[in-house]
Length: 217
Ligand SMILES: Cc1ncc(CN)c(N)n1
Image 1 (tube, helix red, strand yellow):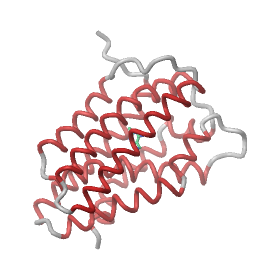
Image 2: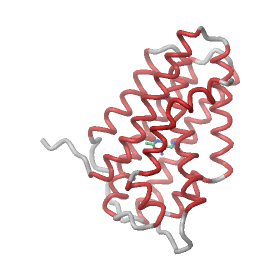
Image 3: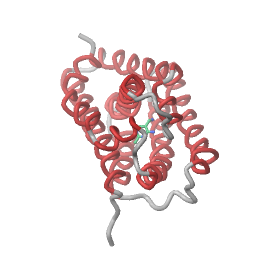
């Protein structure tokens, strides 16, 4: 069985919790309060910027030159999406600035950057995979289950349920499977652990937006 198939099984309970969370349910039926979506967009702008930096670092460390090129392109794509957020979504959703990096965003981006800087490159590749794969699954899930009424968040849904994003996810999964084949079992377990931690952080990221979580001091 492929490393990705085996690993997804370990996060099935986390994924189930994600699709049941109020943020996702309300995004799906279009009732998510604007304030929560604005908070999410602001934090996601910080996230994407730092996700891109992590991807670029992984690209620089990849053994295979084709993997390096793929990761450098992923990094470029994340920066382009981040810019699109500023140029269009922020305006559309009335967000004047992105605020400051709040606790869960801080935790997540520092987890990714530390994996990219300090861990074995295969482990770092596994750590960024949920950022692709979970978003595609959630995008597809919402797209398939949404009600017919006009949804103010349709553009967000279309981004992650679209063909373009699916192609990236297939590529990112393929890279993880190919590097996992050349790893020892211990290294593969470390990859799985990193994938699981990032999946938990995806849950926490949406949850923190729903709670409008902040530093409090
Ligand atoms: C927190 C988070 N994770 C993943 C994605 C999709 N790249 C995102 N936009 N934001």
